[in-house]
Length: 102
Image (cartoon, rainbow, N blue to C red; front, side, top):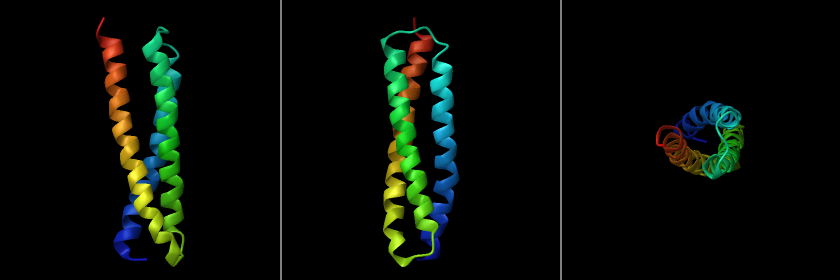
């Protein structure tokens, strides 16, 4: 495993784990918001997003483990992380429009 590969995985691991917590926190906060169709959709999307970040966390952890065959997991960890971040931005726009546009 090359040094660059390990460095990327070491950055993805803590950030992905933190983003799982952020998703769970936002789901909890969304329970306070008035219930409508958009908040229900946002809750479901955040649950899916937390799963994407959890997969990214597990794959990046697997990459850091000392085994030459684990290097292929880093690419997948990176992909799941990027998809999760894009998903988070889309959900943020949905929540912002729901809270600030009446």
